[in-house]
Length: 153
Image (cartoon, rainbow, N blue to C red):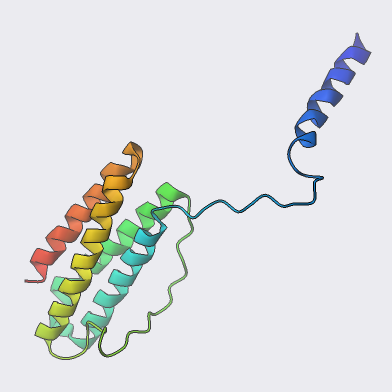
C-alpha cells in the first residue's frame, strides 16, 4: 500500500514535467503585452505634460494639478488590473513643437486639449475592445478624459 502511494506520488510529480517543454531546448514565448499597457503609458505621459504645464505656468496650478493626479490614479489602477508594474518616473522629452508648456498659457492649454483629446479617443477605442471585466474601468477613464477637456476650455 505504501509503495503504491509513493509510486502514484512520483508519477503525479513527474507527469507534468514531461509535457512542459522543460527539456525540449526551446523557451516558451513571452506572453503578449497587455492590450491596456498603452493606456498606462498614455496616462503617465499626460500627467507629466500637466506637471510641465504647471511648472511653466504656475497660475494654472489649481486648475491642472487635479487633472494630473487623476491621470496618475488611472495609471495606478490600470497597472493594478493588468498586473503590470508602473514604470519608474522618467521625464518625457518634449520638443518645443509638442511641448504643451511652451508658449503662453493659452497655447499651453491648447496643447493639453489636443493631447487629452487623443488620450480620450485611445481610451474610448480600448473600452470598446476590452473584455467586460475591464470595459467599465476603461470607459470611466474615457469619460474622465472628456471632463478634462472641459477643464481646459
